[in-house]
Image (cartoon, rainbow, N blue to C red; front, top):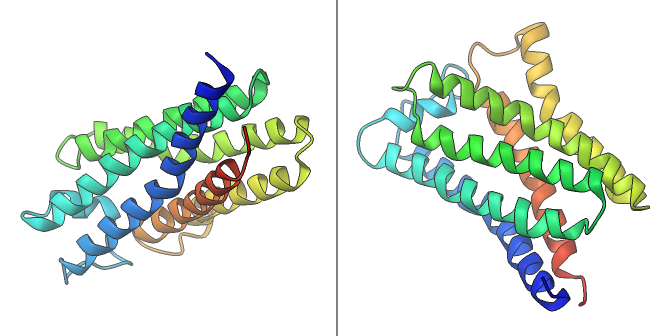
Length: 200
């Protein structure tokens, strides 16, 4: 692949990383707004995916579209960004696996048990793991600031779940799901903007 074509693909991936969280949260929050009985305390976000009408359509479309965009960010953006650096590429592939799990959450909603549970666990587990691997990739690439930011986001993405299983601060998982996804989304936007600022 020529250097110019690689750069174009990287920019497509970077833009996808910025757009993916916007699509996801616009759709999720719209789905919540369309379903007044939704409770942040007593529901999981995935409960929205089986509500009849516009609610499930908004929610599932948001996850599907953002998952595809995030996959592009992983493969075209992150994977190319690291060039021949193996650790960074491994982290990019793990992050891509997390995005595939995100897509699967939209396809296999709560009516598909236990598949839905398994792909949900896969997403919220693989995303922080990918960030920790990518931290080493950035560090080995002498990008210490990004490395510190990435590990901090990895901790922020994992912490809501660690606290849930240790002190059980909420009876259901909507809040940890939202906080974890928000942390990863902020990271994707920051990295996407950084990639877009690079020159060929």
